Structures are given as C-alpha cells and as structure tokens.
Amino acid sequence: MLNLVLFGPPGAGKGTQSNLLIDKYNLVHLSTGDILRGEIAAGTSLGLKAKLIMERGDLVSDEIVIGMISSKLDNNPNAKGFIFDGFPRTTAQAEALDALLEGKETYISAMLSLKVEDAELIKRLLARGQDSGRADDKNESIIANRINEYNNKTAPLKDFYAAQKKLSEIEGTGTVENIAQKLITVIDNL
Ligand code: AMP
Image (tube, rainbow, N blue to C red; front, side, top):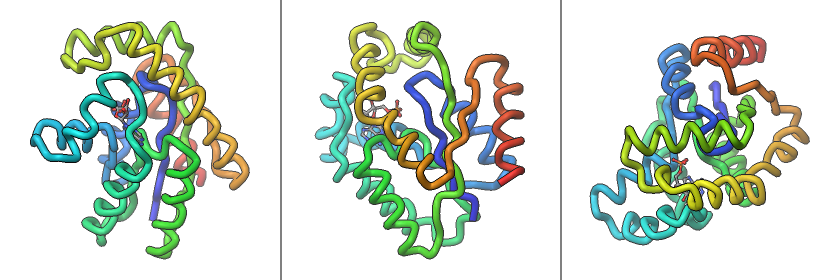
C-alpha cells in the first residue's frame, strides 16, 4: 500500500495536490477538514460539536478526528492506499494513526511536507475565502489563529516522521503542476 501524509500549514496546497495524486496513484483521499464540513452540512451532532470550534480556527478534539479516520479506514478495505490531508495534526493523532495502520498490517510510506511562507498563506487563504465562502478563510484573525495552531501543535509532527525517516520537505510555491511534479518524483523514489 501507498499511504501518504500530505502535510503543511493551512493554504499550503494540500487539497489541490491531493486531488492530483489520488488520480495518478489510485488512492483514497481522506481530508478530515472535508469530512467535518460534510458533517456540518448534514447537520449531524458531530457537525454541531465541530462547527464553533472550526469557526474559531481551533483544532477539533483528537477523539473526534481519530474516530472519523478509523471508520473511513474500515470502510475502504480494498483501497490501494490513502492520502491523509489535514490529518494527523497532533502527536496523539499521529500515534493513533500508526496504531490503526499497524492493526491493518500497513504503515505510513512518507510524509510530504509543503513549505510556504506565512504572508503567501494569508494571501491564498483570503483569496480562497472569496471563492469558496469558507467562514474560516475570510477573517484574518481566524487565519492567524489557524497558522498559530499549526505552528504550536502540528509542525512538531515533522520531527515525529523525521525520526521514522519518512519526512520529505517540498517547496510549495510555483505552479500547481511544478509542485505536483516534485511530489511525484519523491513518491516514485520511495
Ligand atoms: P482544513 O480543511 O484541513 O483546513 O480544516 C479545517 C478545520 O477543521 C481546522 O481549522 C480544524 O478546526 C478542523 N480540523 C480538520 N482536521 C483536523 C484534525 N486532524 N484535527 C483537529 N481539527 C481538525
């Protein structure tokens, strides 16, 4: 199996690149942000719980997102592999993911970490907020909080995967195709 963690701060291009990679490698895309937005749209109790937290730009609890990923893994028993996008975001999530995959006799192949400067992230997110209407992309102080959450709780996961010799850092600026090509080169060399 090819199991990739597509990593980086909000606005780094994880969703865009995931969409290109799932087609090329025939993988299942698991974006916890997309799943949570789906729960909110469907008006589920999980969605209700997550909504206010997401609107503030805070992280949803580990328990909720780990449970979501666990059931998605169970629901895709024949997948050739997965792209994890926006998950894991904390050490507890990364440890839980390793344990879940081990239970299925597989493991993370690599973490591909997209690097983009803060000023560029803010510019991209505000532009996305105009197009998508995502409430958490419209407001600069919420965006600042999300970048802060990333720096404090999520960025340390680079060390977690580096310790397993699985970290590749990729420059996340340039054209979409150019960045995709860099990711493909890393994946094809795994
Ligand atoms: P994203 O679409 O990945 O930018 O996620 C949007 C929001 O969903 C985040 O700001 C968090 O509030 C929440 N979220 C998504 N994935 C996670 C996760 N793995 N852990 C905690 N919160 C998450």
